[in-house]
Image (cartoon, rainbow, N blue to C red; front, top):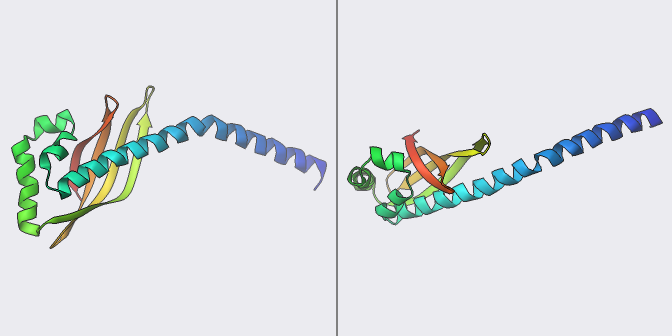
Amino acid sequence: MNLRRKKILAAVATIWAIGMIAFIPDFVAVHRETKSAFLTFDQYAGSLVSRNYRAAYALCGTEFQNATPFGVYEGTYQGLADRLGKLQSVQRGAYEVKGRGSPATWTATIETSFIYEKQTLRFRLALRKNGGRWLVYGAEEM
């Protein structure tokens, strides 16, 4: 390899390395927030599986709780269990975690499978970080 190609390759590698170093804080933040969102998801799913609807509801955001009284929330999940059998597990599928703005506003979307005795239902859960805490803000059946 001649000297000119080596210099060009070295320059490209240097620019790439500087670019990667500049993005390291973003990668670290996304990794940290993804783990935190997953922890909330796991607590939420575990509460639903154990039929602790009050604990699951406590992991929902204020806007969700204002729009959906606890009795309606509990009745929805109890009705699914009555119709489809016991909720055996909730599995996490594809996900996306984003932080936008400065300071970052964090959101997550997690595709899930609610595995009941008689049928599996798929939902897309929406989570947001609010006041330093991840909360569930909604769900839609897929």
